[in-house]
Image (cartoon, rainbow, N blue to C red; front, side, top):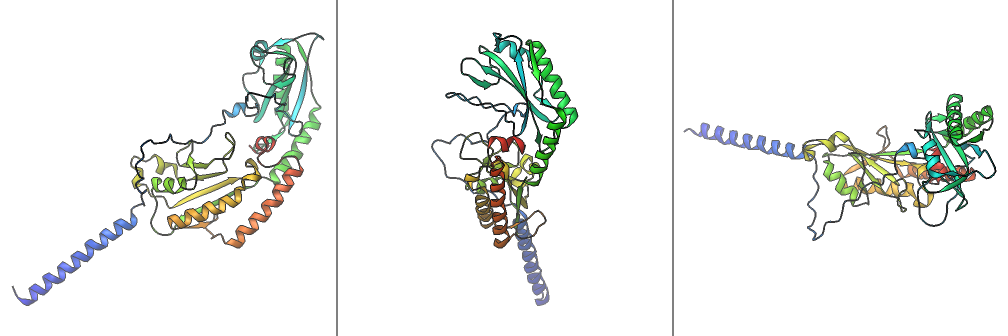
Length: 346
């Protein structure tokens, strides 16, 4: 073999090695980052899950809590309330009879609808319970929620359902004037629409993409637990059963893939529903910390929905505006995270 042939062979080998090395580097660069192996534990704790508050058909019903009696879940601030007086001064209705007379659904149009009875033993309002005795009832429909203000058709449905219940238990309902209540609903809806803040950050990968397991592992280190929907993680509130402080989400298709480890995620969303979370949780401050922590750990950047980088100055401005919003909601007796605010902004 001539020196020329030997030189060409060596050059070809070098080129081939370079091509193979480049291919391996490209493959590694394009492979989603994987979760690091966790240290073995003797007893694996049960996986935490997002709290489920129940069917939204019953969202206006009070939570069943043992102990001191609770006040009515209805409030004239955000509800139309109709009294349902029993026909006769000494009449009593059993819980079984009241439950049998209840309408099949707990909505009037898109608005939550509820009926409560006055418990003669506890002297408190409650959803009818078998075995209890009631000396009167009240029915309510919510004035507004995120679907809009109560309208005339929904009010009429409220009247029809309440009247049917009253007829079944030999009672007489008394309704507020419809036009006044619909006007009140519109005013409340205008206020709610002007003060309904939902914040979103996006964390985008700088270079290598992420696998679902890699995202979940890094989020778990910051306190997130698995949500009820694939691709959703939540940061729980300090009180069990309340809405999560923050929600982290990514492509649900990636989470449901046959081989999630090969699913490439290039961005994740961090969401705060301001009115649903108590101010004392410091949700925006925690949102900033979580976004910065994830960006640093996963080599990402924090942007808005349009891909613009969020600076510290912008974050400070958002934080100041939120303090004003919290004050305004409290002045209206609709403090963020309160039962009334959670119902109105739902």
